[in-house]
Structure formats: C-alpha cells, structure tokens
Image (cartoon, rainbow, N blue to C red; front, side, top):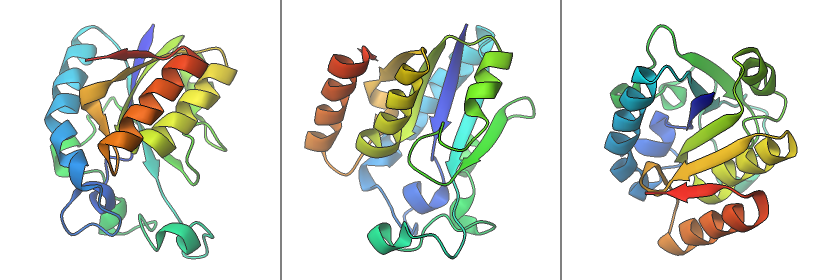
Length: 171
C-alpha cells in the first residue's frame, strides 16, 4: 500500500510572511492538493509530517527561529488543511522518521511505499527518503510536489535520492 507524506507545508515555510520562507514552494501547493485528492480516492492514507520546535532548539542557530510550537508559523497552510481522517505528526529534526511515530504508523497501515511531497527537497525530503530506505520502504518523489531554495539544489537532491536510495522520481 502507498501513503502520501506531506512534509512541512506550514506557514513559516510557505506563506509570504513566514519566518523561513521557501519562495519557490508556493508553486507546488496546487500539485500537492491534486495528488492528495487522487491518492485519497485510491484509498491511500495521508500523513502530514510537520517541523515543530521549542524555543530552546539548537537548530535556530543555523536557520533562525521558525515553526515554533503553538504559533501561526507552525500551522499547516490553509490550502492543504488536513481532513479528519488524515494523520498529523510533529518532528523536531529533518527526517520525518527521527524520534517520531511515523515508522510505527506506516507499519500499522501496512504501507510499503511512500510518496514524499513538500519542502525542502534537499533537506527534509532527502533525509526522510534516506530513513525510509534504511527501513525498507520504497520511495517516490513527484518533482512538481516538492521544492527548495534553488533549482540546482532541487535537482541535486532528486538525483541523489534516485541514485542512492532507488527513489522513483516522477512528473
């Protein structure tokens, strides 16, 4: 079974007033929305994995304060609000698997393939793909459903995931 992972589509990353805005990411919102509808019709579960930090997080030294627990910036963007039967998990590091219940949830749902969408391609998507590979999941990344700070970084990450994790890159 396939599952759709929607990664970090939160106000601080997507909204024009976001604290760590990925300007290019707005272009993937509609593509993710359409893919979500398609996969839900096929019976696939939808899992949101959301970057969420406390005010003591050392990641702020690198990226500045962003997606602080309980703030507007940490909320999922309105255009992609979860449905009542979607799953929402919080993460504090790049990978959706690290110190979260994602692996357990996927196994309970009998998922063996994950479709990774969201931001940012060369950090959170790539690290989640690595951890999925280590756990035996097949991974797919639709190019139009993810983005990062530059086209060069996006292409590098997509090629890396394809070569080293066997990730299927689709349009």
